[in-house]
Length: 50
Image 1 (cartoon, rainbow, N blue to C red):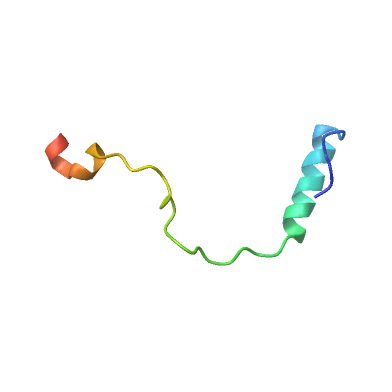
Image 2: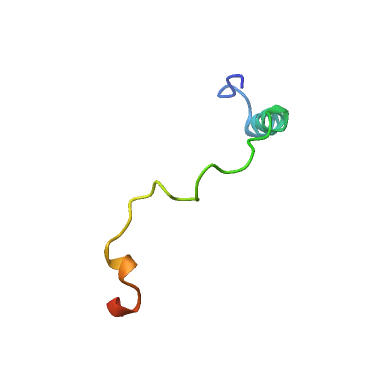
């Protein structure tokens, strides 16, 4: 994508949208969403924490 920092906001929006439409499709996910997020130990306890 070209440098859009010098464009007006509306023009920038149009340029970015055009670039997104021109980009190839990403395809299906390789893993679960958020699989790389830091896990919270207390949250995994389930009902015992309530």
